[in-house]
Length: 202
Ligand SMILES: [Zn+2]
Image 1 (cartoon, rainbow, N blue to C red):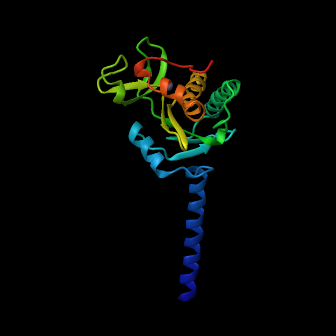
Image 2: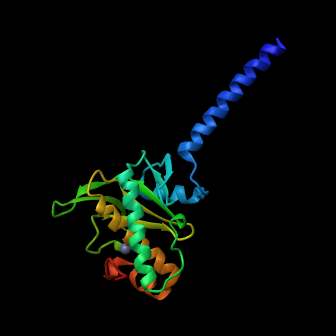
Image 3: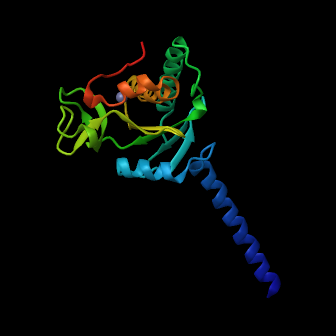
């Protein structure tokens, strides 16, 4: 009886260990991400992000499903362009891929008002209420900064036009790079309801 019990216990321990390591492959990023950040991303988007991975260059990704390799490469390319322009301006802070976490949320629209392919996320209007961008309590945005430390933003899922992902990553990343390298320019450019758009850094 004891022996049999212990055999059962061993089998169930192995099973639990297998489940845990399976979980680690899909749910634990390469570096810890605070639960508060994940909760904020969920609140802003209305999505959950059960899948976690990293891009080839080390950006932490949270997504609803396993992102295509083209998506991961497009994200890396966006950061590559961002870091290149930042270096030209003499910036040195937050220029590592591993500094960043990108959430990929469900698109709330697929085309813009001109009918162009434009996967965007509906976000609470906040400071955009009553502005040109206001859609009635919310705005459509290609991306949005979620946190500065750790540095994170959200973009929408794309099925094609991955070059657009590269642009969105470069543009959202601009706000974070400016925050850490030129706070005055960050303050002047963070709120698009007061005018201004991307790219900020030429
Ligand atoms: Zn912006």
